[in-house]
Length: 122
Length: 304
Image (cartoon, rainbow over all chains, first blue to last red; front, side, top):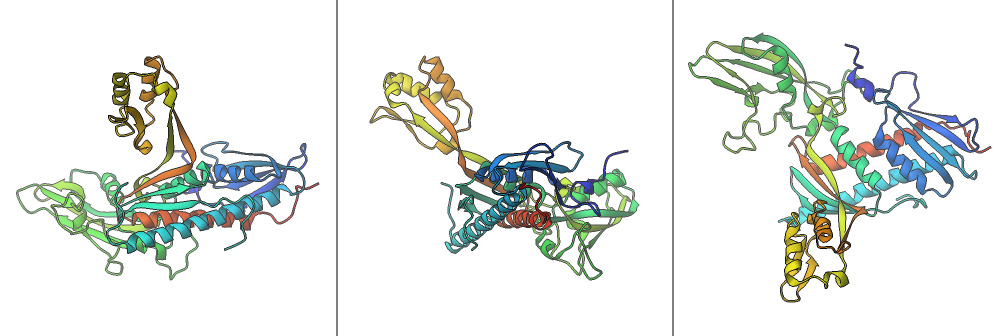
């Protein structure tokens, strides 16, 4: 009866930003990003990418509640780059990586299609 | 390609099997978070087409209206047209292609029980490419056999109009393009030679036979040695380790999951080619990340 609509899970409501940033009031160079209508897929992905950055001292994400369709990503940096900048870099790197995977997958698919018989199980 | 960010990985892809309904590939030199994101996207965010709205005109069958509507929704529809479609929650104009209208009109006139199947659906004349998987392709091939909707007896009737729409698995499971998509960590198995040599030949053979994951280890009759045959077949059952303990020789073998090689297996339901499921998933993921980047606030509040 009071179940939320299914589309709530992936449609960002009007007037709500897809991603917002709030600076931490107690810790320097730290901020929390709120990503609307995202889940573990992006949360874990971005967190792991942020942790590869040497400027990042802390990166973590949480999915506060299964019916609150947003995630929080907390980042702290050493100071040379702001949390916004490291997030920007992480997203760029991830995007490039997936573009790379796509190009390589397409090349492989072409290779497999061109060898008529196709590869068997190894 | 753009300049390589210092924290960017350079993954490798190798396709092993590629069929319309199945794809097996190895993704290496990357992180589990990337593999898992790809798996999760393939599962619930690759758009497909499924019946979403049903208007029942006449239903005198034994199944109630909701039941039939649900069964219609679950019919896999060939979804190559999905790339030109707009979903209900996307910005769409009047011109956009959003609905595929199908209908069903059957009445049983014979004394025998009649099967109403996916083959009885009348397709949209404007979009005949959107049809149930295996539509009117033969009743004998198990894979192409039509999907049973309901059975009828004499004088029962079913008349309805169904609208198929674009959607994603996150909304409803009927839009999931795959039967299964999984990834496996590549196992890394190393045998402690010195310790293995302290076993008798019989013990070695018993040890090899104790593993239910057949084909992982092999006892070589010529060299009298235990060898790793195919590490990939290992099922993480732990029996080899248990047997080592039992023989009083823990550490005979060490088994690790490599965190940088992933074996993906994608089984399509037939709505999209397995290859297209992977490629679309990658595109969806890239679009998602790009949208986030564009929405990232411009003002800098961090560095103080």
